[in-house]
Structure formats: structure tokens, C-alpha cells
Amino acid sequence: MRAKRMAAALVTVVMGLTLFGCSQDTGNDSGTNTTSSGKETKAVPDVVELKSYKFPEFLNDIKQPDVLSSPVYVSFAAADHMKAVVEQPFEGYTCTEMIGNTLYVFREGKYVGLLDSDGRVVVDADTYTAIAPCSQGMLVLSRDRELNAPDDYMTFNGMGMVSMIEPPEFKEDKISIEQEMRYNETKEDDREENYNVQNLKLSENETVGEGTAYFDWDKIEAVTAQSINTLRPYNAYYRAEKNGEFYYICFDRFYNYTIYNGAYGYVRLKVGSGYGECYILDHDDYTELTKLLESFGETNSVKSPSKDESLDYIQLEVGFGTDDAATMTISADGYCLTDHTASGEQQTNNKYFSILDKESFVSLVKWVDQVLSAEYVR
Image 1: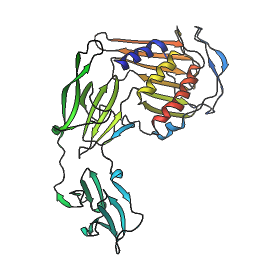
Image 2: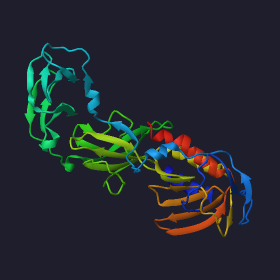
Image 3: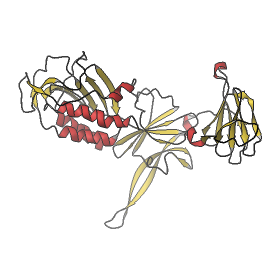
Image 4: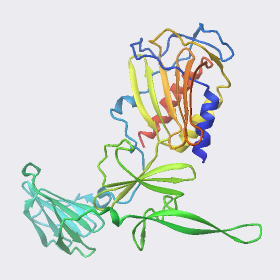
């Protein structure tokens, strides 16, 4: 698995890191810190001037890190099926939105109703305070929230005809994991080569993600919200894997689904008085991180870390989804601690200190600031 090989590469390259306390520092963008070359093995580093670095501001906006923070595909979005009314189409009505080019939401006081494309009233504005699409061909009609009254539902079609229905009931057994056979024609002797894929099915004719890049998975498994550390209230969660990349497929009560990037690692970062945490949620970014770590070169082991607990530091948890995980922490003076855990047949747990080149810490902080920040603004 590609991700497992990358995790092993991270462990081999970094050779260890050290975790320091989170006491306050100056908070300046740059300053004089202590560091040591990767060729040195003494426990007291030389004093050097590090290049300028700063705390990544985007981390201030992440109050509660959530694995489901990087969506890549949404099967249904209500906003795509509604648009604001600019010019009033019917005399005597104040229309606010058009739904699916066939229905108009109009407002009278605090209530809203529905008009068809000919301006005929299909839902009176005397009961509901909001009307919006909730899935393909279905509307949710909401009463005053202060009354805590239940929502109503209706179907609609392309001709603007509506019909009340019972509240939809979510049944997880409607979603099934099915294994299917695919074929590839080999170039050498024109023989067909078969392989197995897994897909989520909602019905005999509906495959989740079909028509996009997000289907024909190597592996799919049902998971819980607790196991993936999310507060997003979906009705069902699945973890999918393809070519070493990880995703989560999450269903709401109407069987609409959102596909999110999976997590490859976790970052904790302290710079001055700033502290933040976030996931690494993009496979390409994780690959870039491995290349950055490889550029640091080899390091030498040492027996003791720095005594300065106020130093800035960055901590990386890597190897998510594999049997080869590591937590690596590097401080601004170059001292490091690696906590490497291998599970599976050969269970090991190794901890050791080492020293990285003096600019390794700065490079990692800048990588978080410039690369990871982009994951959280997409």
C-alpha cells in the first residue's frame, strides 16, 4: 500500500523528535534560537540565527479539528436547486426563490407558500416559515422553529406538481457493499485481466459515485462517527480506499451523500504564544511532506533533549490507516523525539532522540503555513 510505504519512509528519514511544553514565548516572527547540525551529536547545540517563520494564522480558525473537513464530492446540494428571484414574475405576490425552474417560493408576513410556473398557488402561505429542496424531487416544509413542530415533506416534478408524503425514514440496510468484477485488456497478448472492486449500492440501478472518480474502490467498510472523530451528524459513515488513498462516504437521512478526503496524519504546532492543531487531509500534500522530510538528510541519535521547555515545536502523527505509525516532534533548536509504533505480526514500540539540521523546523512550519492552509480554504 502506497500510504504504508510513505509512513515507513517518514519513520526512516526523520529518525526522531522531542516534545516540549507549551509555555509562552516571544511570539515574534523570528528570533534567536538554538539549533544543531545533523552531523553533530553533542547534547548542547550551538547558538544560531534561524530564518524567519511565523505561526500559521489559519490554525486559529480550527477550534475543533474534524476529519470530515475536506469534501471532494456532494451528491445533492440544496443551493444548486434554488436561485433568488430578481424580477417578480407574478403580480400580487412577493417571490423570494425559484425551485427547479418550476416552483416559486412566495412570502406573506412570516409565512411562505408555493406557486407553480403559471402563478397558481399550490401551497398556501399560512403554515410554513421555510420551504426548500432536501433531495432530488423532494421538499421539506418547516414550521416555526420556536414551536418545535415537525417538518412536512412533499414530492415535486418537472411540471410543478406537488404531493404530500410521509416523513422519510432512513434505513441503513438500504445501503449495501457489493463486490464486482472488472476487466483490463493486457497489451502483451491481448488477454483480459480481471480484478475485484467494491461499491456502495443504494438500489439495483444506483451505484454511489458512478460517473465520477469516486467509485470502484479497493475496499469499503462501515465505520462510526466516534471512530473517525467527527461531530457532523450523518446517518451512516463508510471508509473507502483506492490506490492507497483514503476517503469517507457519509449519508444523510435522505440518502444524499458527501465524499470527504480521509486523514493521513495530524499536526500540532506551537510558535510563540500561538498553538493549533489540524489533520493532513490531502494525499498529494502528504506525499509532498515525505519529500520534504527526505530532504533533511540523515541524523544522529543523542541521549538527552534540550532543557528549554519554552521552545517552539511541531509534532507530526503519520501512518494513519496503516500498521506502521509514528509520532515525531521537532523543536526549534533541532532536538527531536520519535515514537515509532508498528502493529500487526511484528509489534514494536521504539522511542529515541536525535538532532536535525537547524532549518528543518522552519521548513516544516512554512510547509504547514503555505500548504496545509490550502486544504482548509477549498
